[in-house]
Length: 114
Image 1 (cartoon, rainbow, N blue to C red):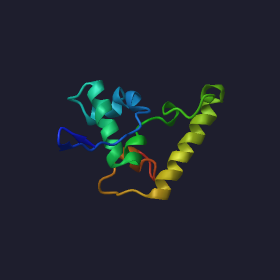
Image 2 (cartoon, rainbow, N blue to C red):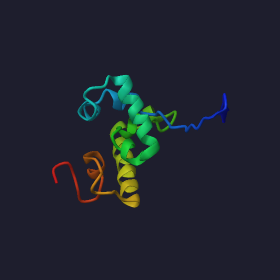
Image 3 (cartoon, one colour):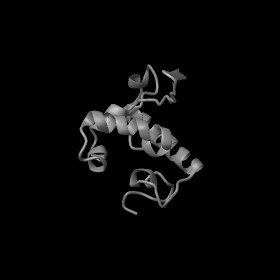
Image 4 (cartoon, helix red, strand yellow):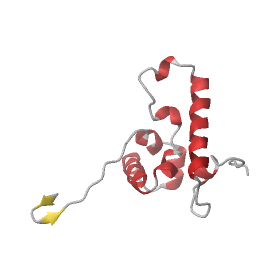
């Protein structure tokens, strides 16, 4: 697009779960000098760079998986969603030298303790 003779470039990123992340302990640990609104903005921006690395920091049930999400068994829903996230991480792979511990914890055979 053009705006006053300047070329403007933009991208669209999904904000689902950003508000949940922005008030989480993980966000406070990663971005201690920012308030919740700024943390949410950083999270949305990071999604453009590496969506999977950013989305694993959000509890899957907070992303919103459908209209009837809350009619389902919450424990089973969490287990199923966690399984899908682990499957995605393992299918795509991770860059072990730059991956956060949130992402590494989703790699088969690893956990926060290992």
